[in-house]
Figure 1 (tube, helix red, strand yellow):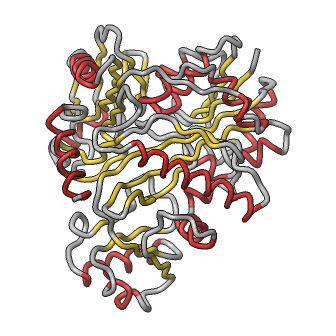
Figure 2 (cartoon, helix red, strand yellow; figure 1 turned 45 degrees about the vertical axis):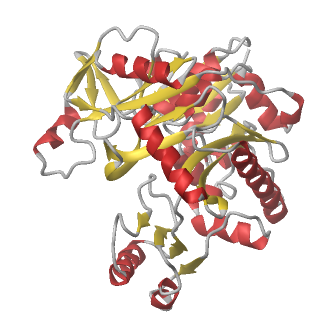
Length: 441
């Protein structure tokens, strides 16, 4: 038996909790959440609500329940040093220390690491702490991407053509970032198709999970603002329709080299999830960014397919014995569609903005998986907040079946809600395939 501390309260943590509780080891789950997720709570022995910056409070909760190990879901507690704090009381974690979490929390750290150890995948880039030199560097690039150096909740990247048009506008965006952050990264813009490769890592061995494609745009047809992710899909052959098998191998090889470089740079093994956001371009596979945890929604595509005992995987990550176990996934397709408040991603003065605090009702969704995200369970029912509400995941032998399941289940969720009905559909995927054919020439 294992007493497991889970830190986090979103849909990603809900699916992690489900994977934990499927274990043959009869674990007991003790979540530490900043708000009450009813899905996680229903799987738990005991829960508590608190701040992710309250490291002593987290330690006290862990001591009280004689925790064997922790799983860290979101990026904020990693950035706060929760793994380091738990280490001081002898509790190991699936998740990197604060220093190693810079893989996500500092885009400069990651770009410089790849450059120092000659790891492929980096764009042309420069880091600026003032506006001096930015105009000259921008003049050398055909397309521009601007990023603040720090956590931005997945919404801080600004791309030419989406967030600004001219070089003068790019410089103004850099000025705005430097008003709030110590530095700004200016990179060349890639053209291609993106994929997420979430890898399990014990510092030496790196194991890829099935690749997933996320859809960040708020509205149908990839229109509207970027969000935390409106949905995602994976295929039964553990590839993606626009990919070549070699693309996965390249992404895994880059991640393996990054794990080795982190140890050379810090003398510390990276133990946790190393999730690479990659893009396939005419130059091959390039790295957009790394996250130091599972993706949301991408975790909901892969963890329900996991055949290997998740507790065994966690222990192998912690003890550095990942090479000793075989990690298997079902050969099925998945489609995740996020149910969101109708006003999600809209300006605050939009008439639908009021929908973010409204009540929702969930009827019979049959055999579809529901993962609760930003919802509030009250005495009179379930209420949405300002963010994504429920991840709806259809699983089937093929993509069409998985998409139909997810779409049908969404009709059973009543309220002032919206979603992207095109996620996982033939029409949207065909656009990806055609785009990639044009890129590859």
